[in-house]
Image 1 (tube, rainbow, N blue to C red):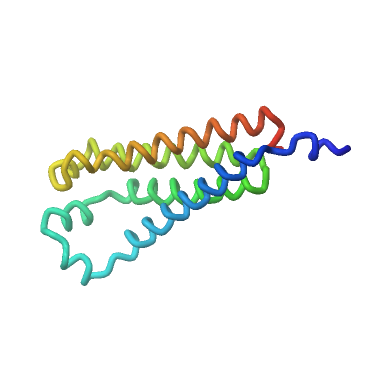
Image 2: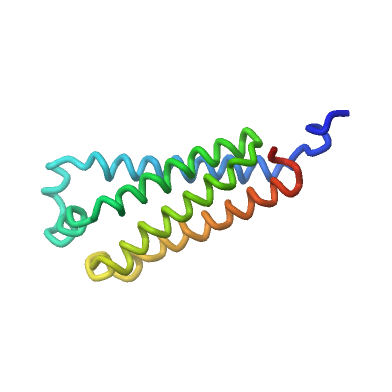
Length: 145
């Protein structure tokens, strides 16, 4: 019997890994929609939303890109059962924290979008932290190598 068959992950590991990939692909989709916002779309925004969008610094946009792309690659690594999923998922959650520090604390997003706008960033960060610990457990259990 091989070591790989002894350390076969349970079904829930695969379910969580697929959900992680789909979640991060939604993040990539959100990033691409944001990055390729057209002039027509900008003109349809309220003045406050447009200023919020156009006033975002490059480092915050970079943090957004890093968060979603490293999260997606990390989720693929989970499905490939690679332990390098954990550092990628850690970088992803750090990117998410950075973009949301800007959104919540360094911009007027709460004034423009309301206090309910913090719900999704909190969910993103909590799920990201969960995935880091999920990958850590995968390494400890020998599911990721």
